[in-house]
Amino acid sequence: MRMTFIRWLHLWRQRPAALPMEQENLLEDVLLRVLASIDSRLGASGHRFPARTVLLALYSSFLVDIDQGMRSPRRPRGDDLPEDLLDRASRPDIDDATREACQFLLTMHWSGRLRERALRAMEPGGSRLALAASLLRCADWVDPIRHVATDMTARLLDRSTDDDVFALMPLIYRMRGHVRFPHDRLDPKLEAWLTSSDARLERALTSFVLLKRWALRFLFEQRAPVEARVLEQAIADPDPTIPIIVFERLAELPVASRAIVMASGLRAKHPLVRQYALRAIARDVSRVPLQVLHRALIDRSAGMRSFAAHTLRTQYHDDPVAFWRGLVDAGTAPWSAYLSLAEHSTADDESRLRRALVHPFARVRAAALLALMRLGMRATDAEFVRFASDPSPRVRRVLAGFCRSGDIPLVNHRLRLLWTALPNSATGSAGELLDALPAGERLDLLFAFEPTTDAERRWWNGMLAVWSDSALGWWETEPALRARLAELLARRSSVLDLPLRIRLEKGAAR
Image (cartoon, rainbow, N blue to C red; front, side):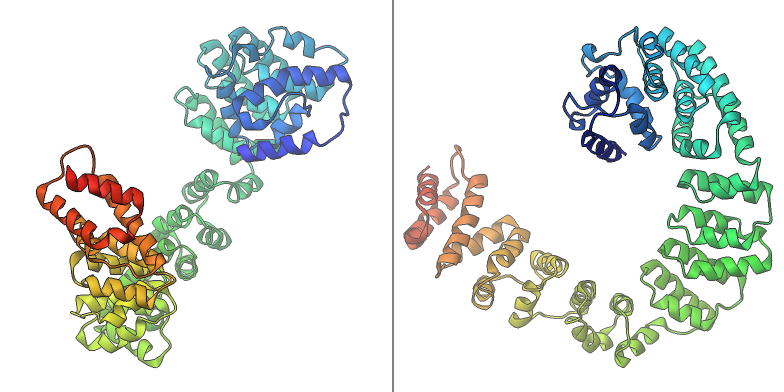
């Protein structure tokens, strides 16, 4: 929301001055100092822009932030609105748009007297900003102002256009979360306004999420049966909470509508909605159609595949693993089938999993490696290098985990093999694997490593420097470590960087 405001400021700063100078000065006095103080990114002084246009362009719930920012203790008191502003703005030479912007901002003033005066002054216009101001003051901390604002909001709702009220719905819902909001008076008024015409209900169903939820629940509770068109629209909503409302009321729908909902749910983008649809079908029929289960067995969602596998076992007494194996053997398996096969694999699947190690999708390669290690695979040196050079961090993290646990040993000759086989990427690969090891094993490998090239020497010195920063300080070095440092200095002194060598020498001597 804030970025919308910044874009408006940028656009209006590029325009030539169009208002009379006195109006421009008044506007600058009112808005520039105040709104610029809310966020330092909003710009420097000297720029002029029409306040009402900017305020109307904001997402309405952001007006709450402006209201709070106007009285923020972090703002300089010199930025407070002048107390004579309401009188100055009422002069005949001030245009209506500037006057309304000044009145709107004064409804946020620290003075309750000025807030109430400005609020009453805005009501005759009946504009969107007037309704916004009354909504903001419905949660005012001063009881008389709150009562005035509540009465004004109720009257303005009847006078405002549908466009204005719907534009302010995000503000309304944000204010309804306030502890001082008068729910007992305004909630029935808002509900009556929304339900007074089918056009408003229809518009609510395409509004923001909170309003869509309310409208859909209202239709189920007050206007049942809900039209099939509305149900399909709800199921296709990108927010999963909307279709879930439909599935929670599924038993209340006619048979034809239930079929439409379940069929639409299976095609939904969100995996949670697809799961709701499949579970609803499983409850609704004695046996889920086999083609539906087969599609679900290769769904992108692991939850969907898992429930489909359970349903296939219980309703058809078939093995879902056999289905996944058949797809892999036929060369038509999507990546999701490989993942499920890896999760449920047995020793008979070793050849399939080894083929999956070269799959183009990293998740499949990582899953295959995990499954093969679970089945007792012993990685060869060539396989170790291939896993370490995998372009995906996911696969390399799996390898690092097995190196840490010792299931895939990282020993001296394999560390040397990385530099021989992967001269261009060994710095990163070797560092990732060593960082995953316990501190003692990492230090053993570093002390035993013999750099032969400039790249190896730089990497080795860097790794030792990181270790020395954490292990060598002003404290006394343990005798065993002093002996190891002395041995390292005797064997590798010529390839140690001078600052590091000095530090290690101090550690060996301390």
